[in-house]
Length: 169
Image 1: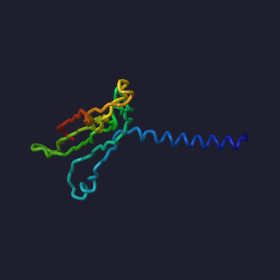
Image 2: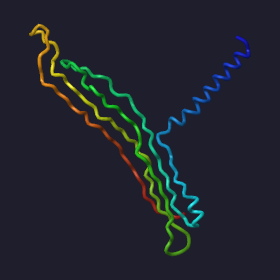
Image 3: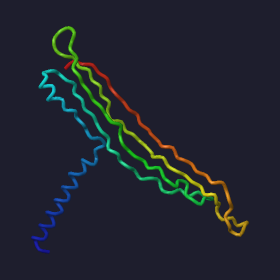
Image 4: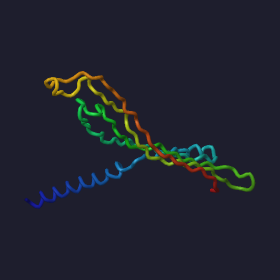
């Protein structure tokens, strides 16, 4: 292999590695910060306005469970599997200046509710046919049974937290 070909291959591989390395931190984030820009209003009205920001979650779909075969049933246990979704509840942070009653300056009140992890499962469906498995007592023919259907309930688990504070600027 010529040295120019090797140099070109090394440059291409370096560029691909840099692109993959730069994309990794963007994908690893669970939430996206959303600041609310109030600086222009604050400067034009010459007042102290609250500082408000938030965090929006990114949905991360998971892998559904595979079919679970049960002895004596013709269809797997979960015909429509539940899909797990990992995300976070939106977060909020707000700080507002409060005028002091006595003295000069401002105090501040703040509310911080960080994004909380959220675990969910979509609804699922489990169905059983009216035919049973082949029965050797009747020459291998299936028997009639009662059809059964069940809706698998969705799941929602989280533990949100928050903080309320007063202080001086």
